[in-house]
Image 1: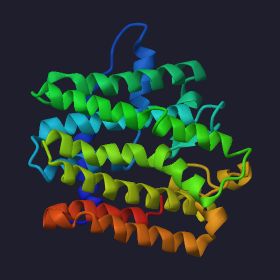
Image 2 (image 1 turned 90 degrees about the vertical axis):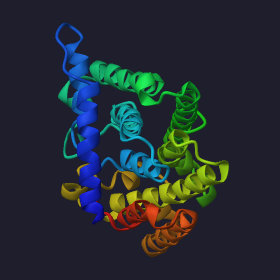
Image 3 (image 1 turned 180 degrees about the horizontal axis):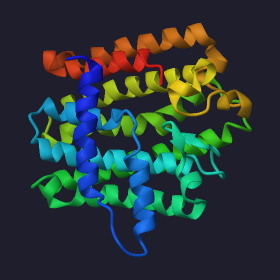
Amino acid sequence: MSIEKALNEAAAAVNRKLDELLPPVAGAESRVVDAMRYSTMGGGKRIRPYLVLNSALLFDVHSEYALRAAAAVEMLHCYSLVHDDLPAMDNSDLRRGRKTVHKEFDEATAILAGDGLLTMAFEVLAHPATHPDGHVRADLVLALAKAGGAAGMVGGQMIDLLAEHETLDIGAITRLQRLKTGAIIAFSCEAGGILGHAAPHQRNALISYAHDLGLAFQIVDDLLDAEGDAAQTGKPVGADAAAGKATFVSILGLEQARERARLLGDQANGHLDMFGAKADPLRWMTDFVITRKS
């Protein structure tokens, strides 16, 4: 199976689950639910849900449990995009090839939609339908809370905002991206191990794979911002340079950044050796991340 087909199948399954978990409602609150649905159902490659589903396959996790965890991480990811796009943050008008939530609705609704998606992600993980073992559900909630909070994605975003006014070296940028992008990718890979009662060394291998994959993902993101096409990426390009941000590309240059991404991809795949051919869908993802154009 090609990575494109595998991604499409995973995305279709997660989209059905998101539609089920977040149906339209009547009444005054329908506007914020509509905005939540606009954010989550508006496309996207569903890379994080794909990682949840395929890390869970390593341990033969029930598909319903994996799908609910995948939907939860996508809710949290979409919340972060809604808030990142706001005027007070990145001030973006375009996301996934269409208007951002605050442009389609308004700023206040966008803030509430993000809040709603964030809290609903934990509601989904804590629900007994996600796993019959309460300890597993608690571990999922704890891991996602750490990955999404000040010691993870939120902390990374804060550093990213400060980077517009400070000069960061390669070590600081690497830490920034491990928090901002890598922490949620790491959760997405570890989630399958949590659901499947994996041994500690197996969970650590998945986390190590995810850390390298996440850095490679961000380097390619920087490359796309520097030389990509907005028609392909579905969002504005050149924003980092315009803001004066230090990135992997601005420090390493285009060719060294590409080589760093390739090396990280090889290193990421090396962590999967213990899983044999069963981890091939994760290896496909590595190749996809390194070569993507959007």
